[in-house]
Amino acid sequence: QVQLVESGGGLVQAGGSLRLSCAASGSIDSINIMGWYRQAPGKQRELVATVTSGGSTNYADSVKGRFTISRDNAKNTIYLQMTSLKPEDAAVYSCTAGYYSDYGTLYNYWGQGSQVTVSS
Picture 1 (cartoon, rainbow, N blue to C red):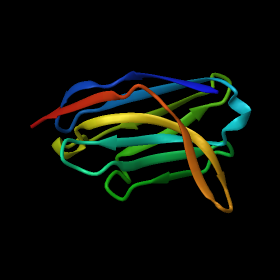
Picture 2: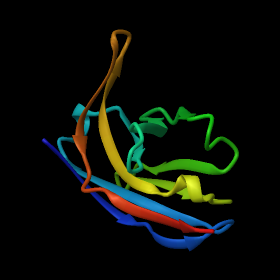
Picture 3: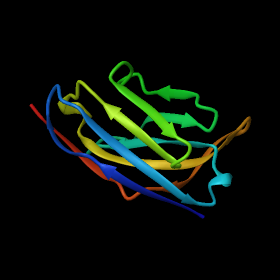
Picture 4: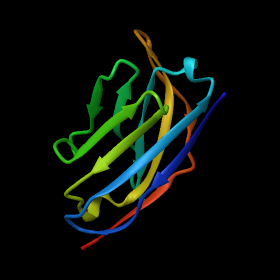
């Protein structure tokens, strides 16, 4: 089992910045990818950004150039630095972890969710 504990989030004005953190513990060797999903009321869940154990990153088009995902392997922690926030970025952001292979990616573990609110 892997436990994910999130921190960060909150209220920010449009154009501002926030940073989310997600610390993983437990059977870390069973995962090789971590990332963030978000879901706003009435909208589909969206995969925002991912980072592999090798450091490869991927972003949703909606956040490219504004959000940066990074990882600290020594702390088993990933970060999502969000800049130039827009009201449409407001959502519950959930950290996730899983395993990817040539057959696809399976996200098995989830954090508790962090509310991000962006005021216009």
